[in-house]
Image (cartoon, rainbow, N blue to C red; front, side, top):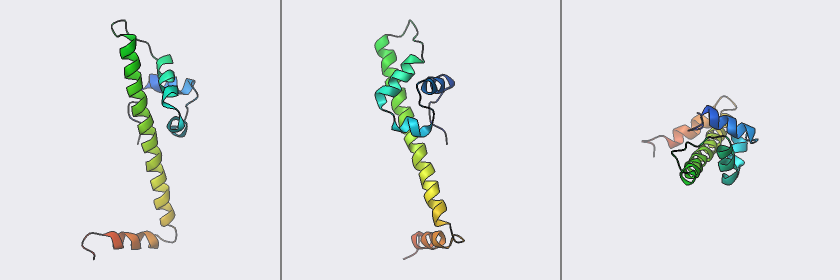
Amino acid sequence: MEIPNITKSRARALYNAGLRTPEGLAAAEPDAVVAALLAGSHRSRAVSEELHRGLMRKAARTLLAGARQLLRVRAGGRREAQWEVGGGSMLAVLRELCSPGRG
């Protein structure tokens, strides 16, 4: 899984701002992410500064949500891996107990 809307230029802007890992990005304040994106982007003359800032705020929200989701997925995989210790017997029991049609 990758963070949505992460382009090369956005990744470079985040990297230059010190946000180098999904963990760092997920922990960042939204304003810091917006500032990093603004510093790393070039606004077209056809786009007003207000619109450009709004687009970067939206991108920052998407990037933050994506980084947090990625961390949740990774953490879920680690929890499942912990249950598989011991030949997977505990995980198999839980799956059996939670399977549809049981009860």
